[in-house]
Image (tube, rainbow, N blue to C red; front, side, top):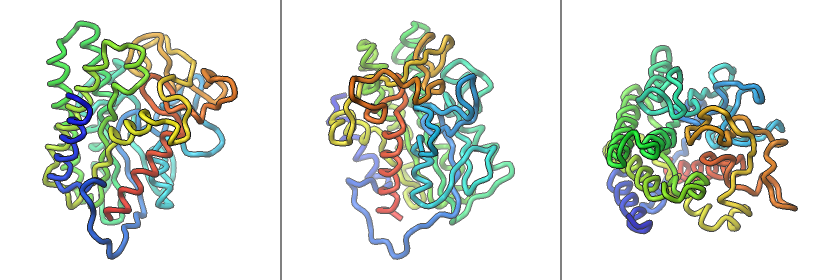
Length: 331
């Protein structure tokens, strides 16, 4: 589907579902929502460091910074509300269960690891002992790992493109089911993020044959998600990462970037890493010192992407601020 038709379809779906994206307008706000806690679920796009490796403790799928700045968008969003978001091992005013490569409802994960908790299982773990209420900001961010896993299988010839597209559409619907669980459990302010258009990723740039499939799979996941939460507009806001990263990669200089196609990290993973193949750059192994794929006179902060799929810290922070602006416009 051409880009402009895709965007129109998503905009219509979002408006029809009363999720109130910017294009749909917003009502006046009598008393702004001020959360006292944040709870996050998702995949590597939202992972604040559930695992450690030989390079990084609490490894994140971006350039792992050590200067105390935020390098994942969910953390930035929470901080914009003066809420500290950390992993389940940390004491904070917010807890993130999001785990790298996690799929919505399927094992193994995008890298072939069957031990990674799915988004459903992350929510299971929280609801087993926790409750949600009016003071909570609930964040659900998933879809990238499902698209990566299904497209990788199609590229390897273990399933057809049609099967991959059917599976990601189902994953989108499955995520909608999990969002409905959260609302039923008492969540009143849920921000939902699907996948950005992975045809804009360095993975697609370096593998042009996958571009069309990645675009269709990304759209299929998001459409399945949106249609499954069409009636939850009173409690749910969809923050459109596909729209935002299309804008950033289409005009990177407008956002302070010099490169929107090159992974700035250089450390490769002998295993499956982020799910795009063996021997590929894995940003969970990346530090500022190893983010060295940089043009003369530039900085890692001017690159949109850390590896072939996941953004760098600045792109994360900017998207977090974008999500915050959408929330403030709505609630």
